[in-house]
Image (cartoon, rainbow, N blue to C red; front, side, top):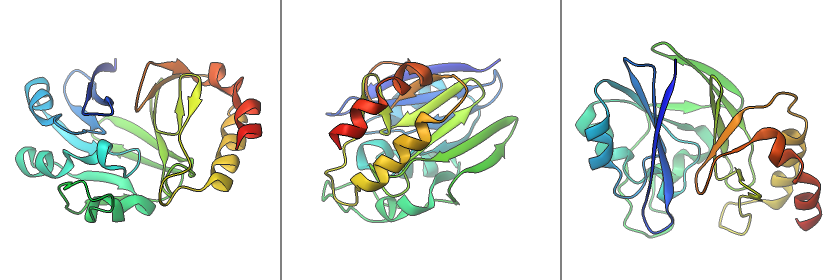
Length: 198
C-alpha cells in the first residue's frame, strides 16, 4: 500500500512529497530547503521526480542527487530549467538522468508511474500519476490553475491542456504543488470558468 508524506518549503510554500511502498521511496518536487527533511524521512530512496522545471520545485534536486546517489527524472521540455538558472535566483544547476517524453509510463522499483503532459504553465508541465494519486505540480490546484504569464508559459497550450483534463474519465485524489489536496472530478467542474478566463 502506498503511503504519502508531505511538507511545504520556501517563500512560495511549495509542496514536496515522499511516496513510499513501505520499502522504497520516491521524492517529488524537492523545493528550497527540502533536503534536511527528506533525508530524515527516507530510508531507501529510488529517485527524484519533477512535475516541471520551475526553481521552487527543483531547487534541492542537485543536492539530493549527489548526497543520496539517486537519479533525477524531469519532463524533457523543462530540462533546460534545471541546467540553467533562467530566473536568476542563484538556483543550483545540474543535469537530469532521465528526460521524460509526453505521456510516458515508466517503472521504478515496484512503482508504476505515468507522466501525463499538460503544457501551458511550462512547456513540459506534467502530472505524475502513481496508483490512486495525482501529483499535479502547478497545472491544477484546489479551485485554481497554473499561471500562464511567466517566461516560457503559453495560454493557448494551457487551454488545450484544460480541454484534455476536462475529458479525463476517472477520478483520483490530486496533490498540487501548492495548497490543499483536491480531486479530478471536483476541479473538472471549474474548467469552463478557466477556459473563459484565459
